[in-house]
Amino acid sequence: MPDNGTLLRVVELKKYFPVRGGLFSHSDRMVKAVDGVSFDIQRGETLGLVGESGCGKTTTGRAILQLQKPTSGQVYLDDVELTKLDKESLRRLRTRMQIVFQDPYASLNPRHSVETIIAEPLVIHNILSGPALHRRVGELLEMVGLNPAYGRRFPHEFSGGQRQRIMIARALSVKPDFLVCDEPISALDVSIQAQVVNLLQSLQEQLGVAYLFVAHDLSMVKHISHRVAVMYLGHCMELTDRRSIFNNPLHPYAQSLISAVPIANPKLERKRQRLILKGEPPSPANPPLGCVFHPRCLLMKDVCRVEIPKLREVKPGHFVACHLADAEGHSKIPTSELSNNE
Image (cartoon, rainbow, N blue to C red; front, side, top):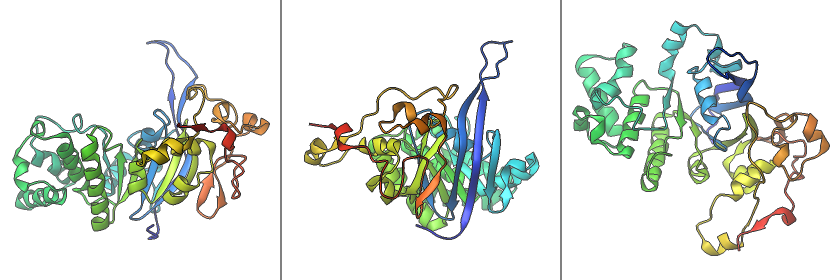
């Protein structure tokens, strides 16, 4: 894992959305989409962010970039606190942080040529113009594996995988230090997903850019990430390196996620025991007291009902938000509670 110093630091990040019942109605209820998330990302590192739909992954990425203003908390890019910047200062800092959106079909202007789309950030920030701008667009297209001549074409002439490559080229045009990849492969065919992930890895090695890689596909997260953060109902439940999270998850929720990852060997898959959670995730507008995971946890104790567990380091580099977790694995689900695939 890269150890080139901390690039991004997120401290107790929260993002709440008000609940409105009608046009003129008022409510004090809040949807706690992100509720006290903390982590850091090293230069040139990929942090995978995983969890169920609606757990706050995308909102976390957008709040970090200040595309959605956080309710509270701090976000530091190097020593600059993004949450306190005015609009002009934040605009100047946009060249250092960019995003690749989830849907390549909805994220490109159909009326603009590919060259115009990729060149737009360079024009907005007054970085290049004229022949130098045209050359830079050609270099970016080559960098993502596309023919520079494609710059004259329009988005509808490309496949989903090619459009995603165009979005990556646009994001990298201003040479950012940090990139939020918001489920960049979920809308693509399985055969194309690995190509895009391999491209992102290659570009990271070439450019030294750091990624926050938001995804559902744990096998892809395992492939591209140096470390992995597991979210549930707006909280970070576990944070560690990819080997530890897949070989020795300590939080019961992380254990259930990892047990759901299919194994390519059919014989091993049939013999494997899985942890199947009961019930559905609570609403973020009405989260349970104490640990948000306790209504579905097979190890739940009385303390879990009333006290929110802090994300703490139980062994070097391994952080867990669980009252029962420790280095000896006391938060492991008993074998008797697991289900067999056979």
